[in-house]
View 1 (cartoon, rainbow, N blue to C red):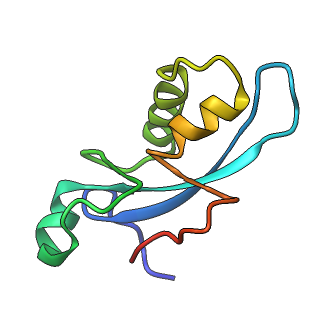
View 2: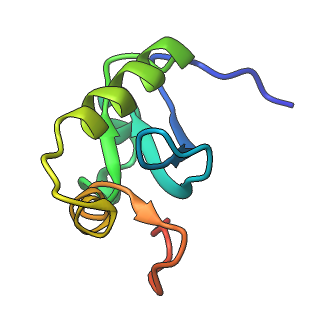
Amino acid sequence: MPRLNPGNCRITVTARVGPVGDDAGDDFMLRFVTPRWLAGHPGAGSPPYSVLVPRVSWDVIEHRVADMVSGIDAADWEQFVERFSEMALWEFSPDELPD
């Protein structure tokens, strides 16, 4: 397996997110991308469901997902899913994560 270069990569992550107090949740997929990776892939642009980070690490991923989730003001789970789905691909979406 090739070694990950945290300063030059794109990684796809599935985050399980659910309502507060509920152990269940739904899966949301998103990509963490570094500027250096984007520079080496000029056709990639800024693909949907992508989060730009200077370096990829699990700490960065966990903090960014937590920040994204906590930044959503929603009255209920359905409204949360609708808003978070603008940033991450919901498991029940008919769409696919683009290449």
